[in-house]
Image 1 (spheres, rainbow over the protein chains, first blue to last red):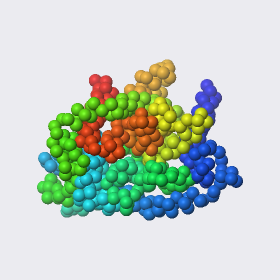
Image 2: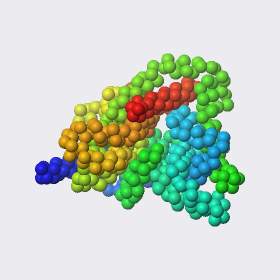
Image 3: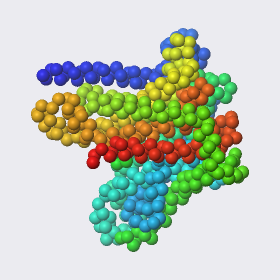
Image 4: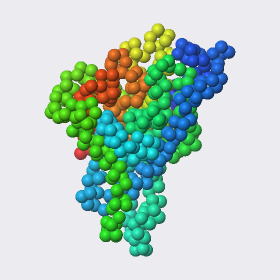
Length: 279
Length: 279
């Protein structure tokens, strides 16, 4: 009986090992092709680079120069970091507040925030781009306001749900000790909300870093692009498509994400799991 | 405490509320209004009643995209949830390598839809090249290409949620069933599945909305080719706004309203169907 069970566990491990290798294969394929001459990528994607088709780092150098990759990587990084920090700070304050103080305004705000979660982006994409344009929010700094607004729904929802489960006694004690609400918020409530910060932060980072359509429509894309826009721009057929540069840029877009993932995977996976249980 | 808090309403809620006004409320109201107007920019809007809606539901390309999205969503919701649940069951058996497998399966979620689309385009076209075909040869290819891509991306995400759900089942409940002589199938259908019902509700809801709202992957993998054959609803709306024949923005706005309402109805219906069985 025992050995039978051990056997089937070994079989499962073997099966999943094979599936895992297949799972990462598409990514590996892109990495392999990023070292090949651009003409041999489309023709024979499964061939390993050989003496004739191997071009070393040429595609990378070419790709980085051609689309000013590093500059746009910087914009992507700034937009994601600034937006997520803004969302975490302001939406956690707001989410907690609408749970503690109930009046017409806070009730309406919470209801509208939850409602916004089910609205598909396509419904407001045109008018949002126009609004952002009119208010001159078409810059990497301005788009932070747009992300705070459009991303507020999920964040307010998750923070207010968490606030409902927080014991009031701690806050009352802080109040008696003479804290004003802001001091209380930053010294008492914020530390308790830490797990929700991690969950919301991870979900928002995954969304904003990879978002294509919102920044494409909101930003002044002659001046500012994010990584997904650059990739789409390269492939979208402006002149001849340089497959080598595309492969290199895709690899450059993926690698930082995977490096961060490898180091923080425990938090990321736990954060995602916790986020859904509450949501 | 309430009294002290009330004075702080602007501090806690205004930053989010103002951004929310700009990033959601104003564009939303404008969008709904513009769906009853004929316009190319917001300034030249003329009220035309429901004629946009009539044109939208008479547009064969739009109707095709709705059908395509609906079939696509049904197929992916079933596949993603069955596969994710099966993998989650296997990975909660304490087999060797569980953490590694979990990490690998979740990884594609961190990479954006645009990048993933091009990664898989390389792979699919590489395989199809042996048959002298490409992904845009027929809509069927594009359909299954998108299905494989979305499953590859989302099985890992839903798996994480199912694992979290499965781990919440008390171990002694399963042991007791085993002692009482319950078979594997009985344990699965009588204990495990009913216990993770909340997770099933969340996961089907998420995969349902993800399927319907799919845009980035669609744009990158097939761009709707051949001749709108693989164009899904979100991409169809986008093309109505920004495509080469962008004279019908009012119609695009009407399509987006139809899309949003349909999405909300399907979501509510699904919640009723999967959650309502408890009573």
